[in-house]
Image 1 (cartoon, each protein chain N blue to C red):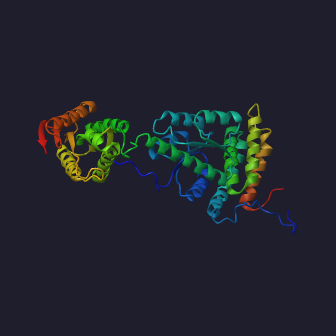
Image 2 (cartoon, rainbow over the protein chains, first blue to last red; image 1 turned 120 degrees about the vertical axis):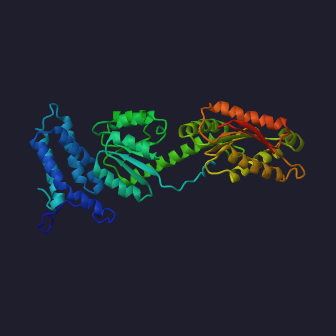
Amino acid sequence: MDRTGHTQSLRSTLADDPDYAALIETFIAELPGRIAAIEAAVRGADAGRLRTIAHQLKGAAPGYGFGPIGDAAASLEACIDASADGSLTRATDSAMRLAALCRSAASGAKPA
Amino acid sequence: MNPPEPHDDAPSRVLVIDDCVDLHRLLKVRLSAEGHELFEALSGESGLDRARQVDPDVILLDLEMPGLDGFEVLRKLKEEPHLQEVPVIVVSGQQAPSDKVTAFDLGAIDFVGKPFDMAELRARVRSALRLNSLMKMLAQRAQLDGLTGLWNRSYFELQWANEAKRSRRHDNPLSLAIIDIDRFKEINDAYGHPAGDAVIQGLARLFQREVRGSDIACRYGGEEFALVMPETPPDSALALCERIRETFGQMTWARHPARKVTFSCGIAGSRVGVPIDPQDWLEIADGNLYAAKRSGRNRSILTDLTPEPGLRRVG
């Protein structure tokens, strides 16, 4: 929450750069698909798919000005890599945190 | 083909091999703004194919990709003669020291971790392109003759073999001329080596002015030159060499204005592809050169290798 009591959205740090406007718009437009993919991978316990999504977001999201999404994706990737048995038990919270940040960027509502 | 100019204004070709579409979009906008031409591949396999097609000036390569991974792509790139010198910058989220060591050992010239700072990546691409340009310049210099700026003998040998093969494969005309300046030693002895050098350089300039873009003019050694004329039938080759010979014979030289200089020329050519070994073809042209010398110099002798070989003397 900001000082006026309104919830802030996750906004690209490059949002004011006209060179990035169309790029960021496309990235945001595709976030709902990524959120659905993250949730589906968690439901299906598909660690490989979840790791690929996390790996790609880790590399790309900061380039679009969404550093927090990149950080959350890096945490999720590390969590999956640290899982000795390939289960998503410990990664689920991390995945949900990443999905929530993506949702915030896509819809304009910052997660709690 | 005269040696290319050292400065080339064509946009640099940057090939990005990465399975992440977002990264391609980002790099396309940011690197195109620098004047680079971007090519994309979403997998290791398609990246190798794309590299063979576009002959990139630099490759940005991800490591973690489904199918062929970045290390494997790098290994294969370094095995291909036409691609092994292309600088490869690894751009990867895999940043363990062992990954970096492997990438550098396989021939990468740089390693950028993901996420990356765009300004830094652009600077590293510029740096790789500068290095590539210097490497190309060095490679080309190794094939140029220092005195004349024409191609040198090693380049001639490579290109002559290639053109002979191409002519045979496509059934195209091809001609070769071997040219030697007459009584060159006398010029050196009478007027000094700078005078001899000036004659060699004068003839080289004449070649550069008179030959077509597809012809390959080389200094074969000493006062001897070779002229490869792809897609040129023997009569056209003879006409070109005769025109150059006549112009050369009329030139006036600052160090010896009263003394004209001539050359003799041996030509062997065919109107169609012929199954003759390039070395044998060269020896026929060389034999004609010595025949021209023996029969009085300042003339060209041609052997038409197809379809009915004949020998005729001109000049």
